[in-house]
Image (cartoon, rainbow, N blue to C red; front, side):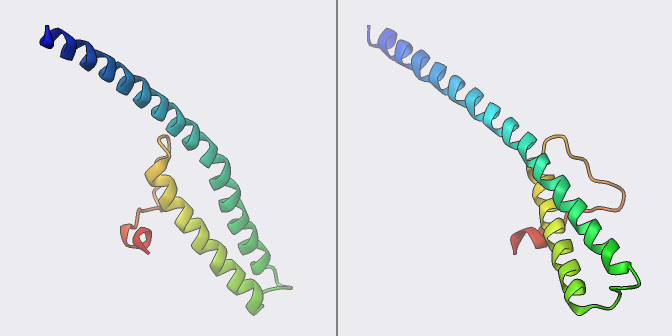
Length: 104
């Protein structure tokens, strides 16, 4: 009798845990897709700032140079974050995951 009760409780708890894990996985997949919408514009912004900085009119401007460095740092951090959390992202040939930067 006690074994049957424990078995029933175990089945209920396991069923709940399976449902909860599936729910969490769906949220994680949704988060992964939403993050893609954030990473791409960040990378495009960094590239745009670099292009503007390279223009003869702005080349050497200290403000644009610091803005370019800052945008590259943010893009690098987002790439590290993307490597960890985006399930479909693969490193390019010129990219590498830097675990030390992630810890900072």
